[in-house]
Image (cartoon, rainbow, N blue to C red; front, top):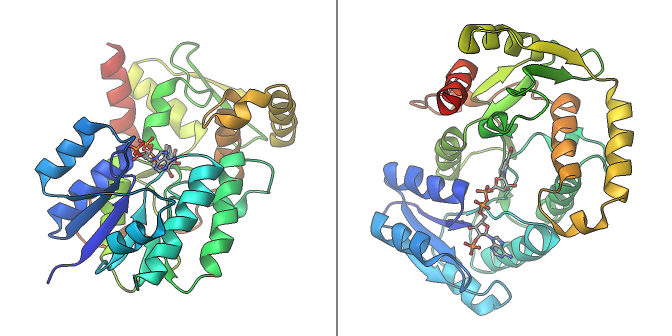
Length: 301
Ligand SMILES: NC(=O)c1ccc[n+]([C@@H]2O[C@H](COP(=O)([O-])OP(=O)(O)OC[C@H]3O[C@@H](n4cnc5c(N)ncnc54)[C@H](OP(=O)(O)O)[C@@H]3O)[C@@H](O)[C@H]2O)c1
C-alpha cells in the first residue's frame, strides 16, 4: 500500500504544489480543509485525486480521525500565533494520538535557529513551535529553504529594478543568500515526507547568490549593471526595524507588515546554510538565479 500523507494548508501556494508533487510520486494524499477554505481550490484538489477532509482545528476528534493511517503529516499552514502555535499544536497532538510517526512543521524558511530572538517575529514563532515539537513523541523534519525565490520579483532593496540598485549590509557583498522556488521546495518536501529516515532538518536552496553575483547577472540579463549600494550595518538596520515596528502596533496582527518584510531582508544577511541537502534525493532539478532574473525581466518587458 502506498504511503498516505496528510497535508494541512493544501489550499495554499506551497501546500497545493506539495499535493501535486506527492501525487506525482505515487503517494496517496489527504488534505485538511476548513469551512473558510476557498471552494475552487478545494474542488481543484479533489479533481487532482486528493482526498479532502473537512475539519475544525479545535475539534480534536475530527482531527484524530483525519490523521488515522497517515505516515507523515505536513503542515504548510501560514499565519501568526493562532496558526503557527495554536493550530499546529492541535494538529501535532492529534497526529500523536492517531499514531502518526512523522511530522513536517510549516517552517520553509531560513535557518531560524541562527537568528537572534527578537530579530524576526515570524521566525520567533517557528522557534517556539520547534521547542513544542522537539518535546513531543514524534519524528520531525524541518525543511529550511532560505527565501522563496519569488521575493526577488518584488523590487526589494536586494534587487530593485526601479532604482536599478542592489543593497547589502555590513560589507557583505559576497554573502551567499539561499533562495528556493516554491516548486523546488514542494518537490523536495514530498521526497522528505516519503523518507522514513529523514533527519530533524534538511537544508536546501534552488540557488545561492550574493550581491556581487547579482550585480553581474543584472548586466547579463537586464543589459545594465545595477549599482551596488552598502546601506550601513546589520546592527543599524536592526535598530531601524525595531523602531519602525514600535511605531506600527497594527502590524502585530498582520502576517507581512512592512517591518516584517524588512526583518526577512535582515535575516537574509544574518543567516545562511553552511551545507546543502539538495542531493539527498535523486531526480530533482533546481532553478537557477539566472532563470529567476530572466523571468523577472520577461514579466517587466
Ligand atoms: N521562505 C519564504 O520566503 C516564504 C515565503 C512565503 C511563505 N513561506 C512559508 O511557506 C509556508 C506556506 O506558505 P504559503 O505562502 O503557501 O501560504 P498561503 O498560500 O497563504 O496558504 C496558507 C494556508 O494556510 C491555511 N490557513 C491560514 N490561516 C489558517 C487558520 N487560521 N487555520 C488553519 N489554516 C489556516 C490556509 O487555509 P484556508 O484555505 O483554509 O484558509 C492555506 O491553506 C508557510 O510556512 C510560510 O511562512 C515562506
